[in-house]
Amino acid sequence: MRPILTAIMFLAIVGAHAEVRVIDDYGRSVALARPAGRVVSLAPHLTELLYAAGAGGRLVGAIEHSDYPEAARGLPRIGSETGINLEALLRLKPDLVAAWPNAGSRRAVDRIAALGVPVYRSEPRELDDVARTLLALGVLTGTRPAAEAAAQAFRERVAALRKMHTAKPVVRVFYEVWNRPLMTVNGAHLISKVMALCGGENVFAALPVIAPPIDREAVLRANPEVIVASGIDGRDPIWLQDWRAFPQLTAVARGNLYAIAPDLMQRHTPRILEGAERLCGALDEARSRR
Image 1 (cartoon, helix red, strand yellow):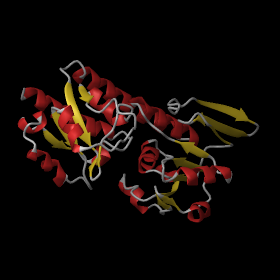
Image 2 (tube, helix red, strand yellow):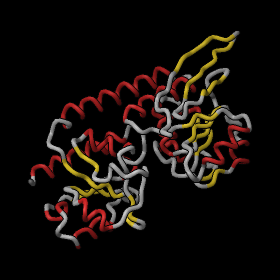
Image 3 (cartoon, helix red, strand yellow):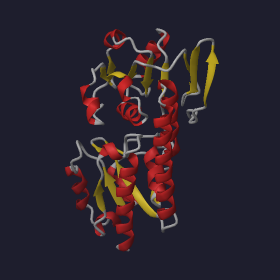
Image 4 (cartoon, one colour):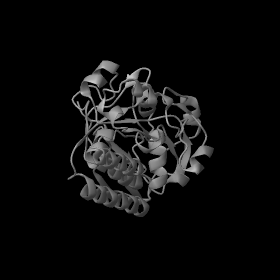
């Protein structure tokens, strides 16, 4: 069942304390007696969102690859997405854990919640979920003004890009997450929503799995007009050029092979709009080659 994607926030005065409460992306209520002062992030995108929401100073720990902004690199590490060190996490005495429950971390996230640590679970699927998550984190950490400003700026940039691009002729796009195994995203993934923002159409939108493995023959049958690949550490992936072995592909015949750094497309943060701007530019270039 698709996670609930709205965050309903309100502030209630309880006795001498200000209780804060939000509903996370899984429909679970997250309530704190007062705004969190010690936060641990279990996902790089949540680390980045906490900083964007003005709560970076409240972070006391994060998982590996939490590397943006620069200040995040100095946070104590409590494991990775596939292996959370519960003892290290509990030693930090967090009053809030922000988590993205995936196959590698779901059991640890449930264990943390069972131990009584409040957990905010994040699962953005729409562009506006980035803004909603900023607002939710701002409520939970007591940084609402900064979070509201960041959310408003994000929404304004989305609206401007949508106005500029979505009425343009549709471009069929294949987004290559990885090459071995060959992986892409379906229509439910946020990357597909970025494509739509630019007037693009995901050729694998109808697949049932959000990040499915596919084979080369499926790409040849889909015959995308544009191929966009992620990479490692911002470098263009060498394997993007492997598609040149198939000149019958429209994307290859027209020279429409592009790389966008994964942090700008695969992290659900305000920086995804930097990736969107690059993708929109690539699709405009592809239109000009028709």
